[in-house]
Image (cartoon, rainbow, N blue to C red):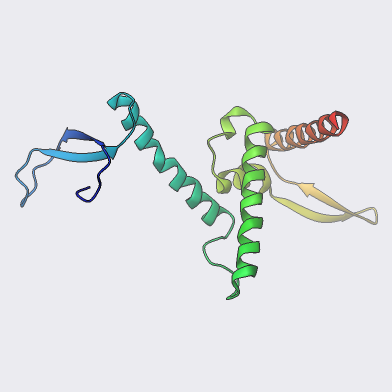
Length: 162
């Protein structure tokens, strides 16, 4: 901050410590935000606090789609791998917000997998046919069928719009 000629505003947030610390006798915590924004201080603090959501989205992308490590040592192949992962993540977000019930909107990838896709089933042979016998609560099967129908309706509405 000492090396800039541009004007900026410094917003300092102070809140009390719940427990005294051995080497810091101050009764408060402090957090400083340097900004050139002209909104009210509360609005700047609110915008600054929301930046953590981006970090959570990146964490969910990495852990939810196995993007912690790149698959090979070639940069171009890794870039393609990462782009495919980002496309899959964006499709997942769209699916979650458009096709699933509102209470699913805050769920992570792992939770949606657990609640929607991971259904116990067994492949059985009956009357010379292979059948999939689902051992899941009916509400889970109904939700999955509604989800499939909603996706189908969205695809059909887009096809007729073109």
